[in-house]
Image (tube, rainbow, N blue to C red; front, side):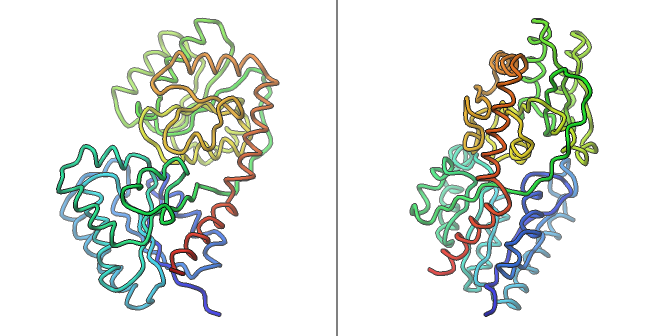
Length: 365
């Protein structure tokens, strides 16, 4: 019996961002053996710096991608086309062309949102944009979101049975811990952006240092705004913070950093999807301090495998860090809970099962 054909639109690294990482994992997973996955790379940016910026070359590149989709559908006659959608007006218009091409050629379409800012964007957009979004989404058979608490984002567009939940999931091999010091270590792994809570973490470290709490901290990521970089580095210099800041090149060693860490902190201020860094920290058996953004609270259960703090609140971050840094048994207990939650919910097998059920449900209707 031939496998059902699914055209999957997506991007592959670089740049190394959540959606691109997810696409790579999907294409190399068991899902590619259960279905005949036909991949169309829709990437028009090779670096974070060019995101959201348009030029003639990028326009021609996107037009070429539209023609590529047209040709793939004609050749393969897929049972389903999976299309990621953006949360900006320009991005959604660009993505909507993929949807309309697929419908013109009589294909079933499911869209996927890898974020949680959809409603906020529409609330700030014009009436004509809202009408266009409704017009386009009516031509699709459903939507995939990253967590159950994100289903509400599409309650005005789809029936409940058309909203599918597929959290991020992957298989990770975590090396043995390789640290000689017993000083507790904090790890932050993401781009060094104010929106990701980086300034709040540095402010929290100042509070810890002023209380003479022992710790060391590693940060892995890129500075994308000079003012944020200047703010944080000034705190390091003024308060002699025991931190090490590594470029994203060190991401190749991130699982050794995770294995060596005692606490993972990622407290974004702005909406998120289901951050891969949180999944990775749970796979490494770390307690996690984060905020209630996107689907994070479906991974980080407050008081169970970490703590949820209010966004933009360094004092709360410092309080929870101090609690964990000064209580090794609590760190270990919460870390075990993280590992258990990861194994039960966020492995590659979990993700493959969720995608398979979603594809079968949409294709079968």
